[in-house]
Length: 335
Image (cartoon, rainbow, N blue to C red):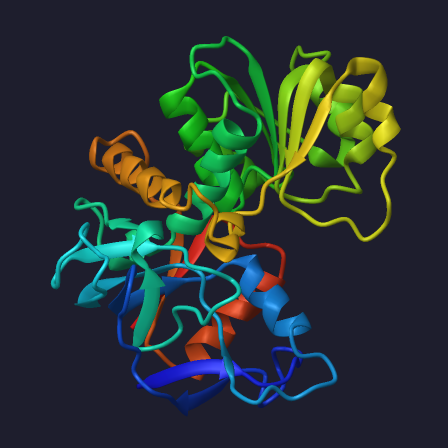
């Protein structure tokens, strides 16, 4: 089968930053299924893995990126009873394994769900990674009670995760959503996703206070942990909860949270599949819930751009847009 990956970490403009190659089509055993991939989406993790996973070395076999996918089931393992050949499914995958930038992909059936019926391939493939990240952060990490009349600040409201987090919060909870954005187009986008208030991350504390909130009960940071650390420590309510998905390059002062007995936690969407946790099947269940919310009209796709064609040029184009730091919503590559 045809696949696209890399053997050495290069800047995206390097001729061999991504390469096309032939590899063996996988066969399903156990809980695995094989999916004929129809479309994939672009996530910041793709660029980070490409840039860092093979620095100053050459991999024996190319690593295949792609951490969102949608397609048709063509083979099932002997332990699979939740899918049949011909099912249209979507999923995010496992960062420690080969990804979806290939004609066929081997994927654990427990982290897969039937795709939303109301969306086409490119509209649906942008949802899994961001939806799982947002859902796990809010309900598995911060343990938000959907009936609470509380507040959540989403730092990075116009990106893929922030966009879907806003929608999930508005469609499944009573939370008041405050999202950050600074450009006219990102402010408009965040408001369209359902944010009650949009504030400027460049002056976060004052911006939140200007819309009437001295503190917030929950903070979900999908933009930058260290830059916003002091602001988050100031804005979080007593006994509040902060969750982030972004690594810090320098230490942060966690002692700032002690006077408020505030909590800090990480969300890493790949924890369940990568470490084969006891509750790994929860990811498939979450994706099923997301599909239902989509088909009920409560959540809409965050797709903003589609690139056609499964080629090195198409994947490189998506990487460049992602690395620009100006992407709004999500990008899909339709095979």
